[in-house]
Amino acid sequence: MSENIAAEQEWRFQVNPWIAMIPIMLSIFMFALDETISNVALPHMAGSFSVSQHESTWIITSYLVASGVMIPTVDFLCKLMGRKQYFLLSIVIFTAASVLCGLSTSMPMMLISRIIQGIGGGGIMPIAQAMIFEIFPKEILPLAMSVFGLGVVLAPIMGPAVGGWITETYSWPWIYFINIPVGIITFYLSVKYIEEPPYSRKQKGVVMDFSGFTFMALWLLSLQIVLEKGNDNDWFNAPWICKLFTFSMICLAVFVYIQIKKNKSKTGLINLSILKNNNFLIGTMAQVVLMGVMMASASILPSMLQSLMGYSAFMSGLSMMPRGAGCLLASIISGVMIVKLGIRPVVVVGLLVLAAGSFEFGDINTSIALANIAIPNFTFGLGMVLAMVPLSNISCATLSNKDQTNAAGLQNLVKNVGAAIGTSIATTMISRFSQIHQMTMVQFLNEGNNVYNERLNAMASSFVAHNYEYHTAINMAQGQLYNMLKQQATLWGYVETFRYFALAVVLILPFVYLLKEDRKRPKKEKQSA
Image (cartoon, rainbow, N blue to C red; front, side, top):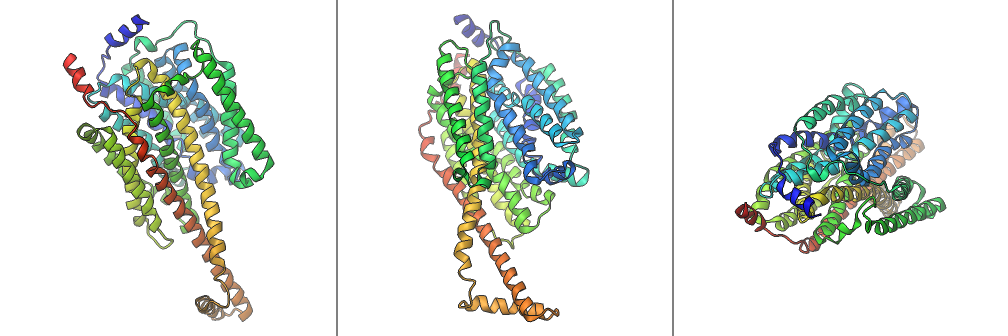
């Protein structure tokens, strides 16, 4: 053990860390982009495969489940074959699977290809995060984490816009084919510039935790089905949802029990003892909430613009670009702010800005232009990176280098689960709030309401002027008014959901002050050096 610690302290990266950062960021961007790039292309793919649009959502789900299942195995696979070798293998699998996705001619072929793609991509994010913590000195780590956070947040935001433009300009297979040149370049640069520390090389006597892996896979798969189908089946009013959710929770409990039992012999899939680290536990849980808010908002906003305002796939995706501009600005200033103010103040500022961006969506209506979405989106992106980057930094800053891979795997696993839960909750909230507002407003559509009568008669008169009979004109006017009411009720469902996003973000604030920060540490290290 002492030899490993000595090797960890003595060994230093020879390559300039910013050069090694290039393939790391390319891999992160490629993986994160594919989480959302398929969203706006689903109707086109559904038509190509002759399936319903609801069934086509499994193209997204299969990728998320596969990558989620692979994330906890990263630490084991790095020990089995060496971290750099596994990272290179992940890039190869991801790129090859992207080719298969673009060549898919049926739904089963597409799902298999997306599962393979998720298997390849599952190892990319945790390894990349662990490597960034290792190759950068403490003095410039905040700046490096700002760049990392930009890739993690910006890529999913750009996904719908890039996917919409490619789908409308060319065809949907090209949203996967664009990964080919990026994957090749990333592989080449990784081979050339990424180094392998002694503690992350291939180890002997590594044993796979097959029982833990099985129950984890069953837990994630069953949970994803519950989240995907719950809202459509009225959640726990459906017996099969109750049974499947119970099964999922049993699998989770068994998985946790197996990991606790095997932690003593260090043969578990994940070392859960890392949760004893206060910063890691609080920082990770905060990131789970933020990831749920980020992915849910990225999912429902384009949907709102398409369904309520008639935006095209490309225009709805383009509406997310100001959020990317906010992310870019935040990534530039966050490193400087962390050095001058410290991590906790920057997190607080980020959370408050993010909450403000969510509240700004409370002023939207169905008559607004695309430009009116820009300011709330910009504010949202600015706050997201200002909060996420320092949280990522402080949550893992007190861990040793040899614990980084395991920590990154566990952190990314629960963040993926948080994203899935957040998206599902947001969808349910929109549905429920819309129903509540519709029931409240429909009582005003009666003959005793003078405003309703005036609007009804005005609409009916316009129809009569186009040679419709009076009774037909009245029925058409009533139908049109009711459709307007449903549209307004749905809009309010979206508005209230965004406001609850703000509430969820504000609730994180008290926990930020439980994080421990040692701002003098970099100076001490510099003096000792």
